[in-house]
Amino acid sequence: MIPTGCKRLLVESDDRDLINELRRTFSSTVILVNTHQTKHADLILIDKRKKRGVPLDIRWHCKIICIVNKITEEGIEELSSQGVDHVLTLPEFKHWLFCLIKRYLGYLEVKTRQYKYKGITVCRDTSSIIYNECRVLLTKQELKTFENIIKKECPYCKIEKPSMKSTISRINKKTKEGAGIKVIENRYNHGYYISI
Image (tube, rainbow, N blue to C red):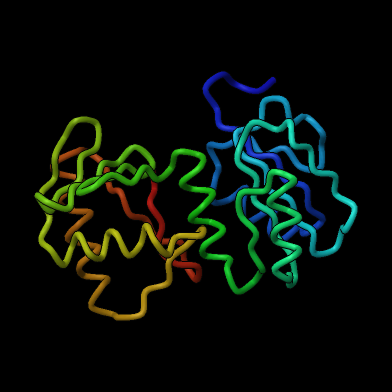
């Protein structure tokens, strides 16, 4: 039984690594794998790298992302005519794939000066974040680090500069005091992630 209000991602793929990564990254999303229950899907991801005969149905009323090895201009036009919204090649555009999924499933709602990610409102104009109606003021550097983690999180963000660890620590201290929760967690040997 699928809970009401849950987002549904239909994945047509044999790539177990990709499916497991999707499940880790989008843990609050129902992920249906290789099934034809497209009636209630919010987003469909079709992997045509190994399977060539994946059927496309133009009656689907949701966004469709198609993954291919390589494609010509004619191939893009053919897939577009069948209802595909985005055609991506992996691994080159893996980050873009996860950004699109975040956007279409409502994890990332981009507005002009503020956007929402996993229930956290990021306000660029006031350099703050809002969670559970509690505003936490950040410095410009802290906001930049927080947004960097959001952009690179799929499912974890590796830190390039050691100085970012102290910035993350300051962000967590502020969010713990202001909203009662640390918003950034670290998984050993994997990287940082938004813990909400």
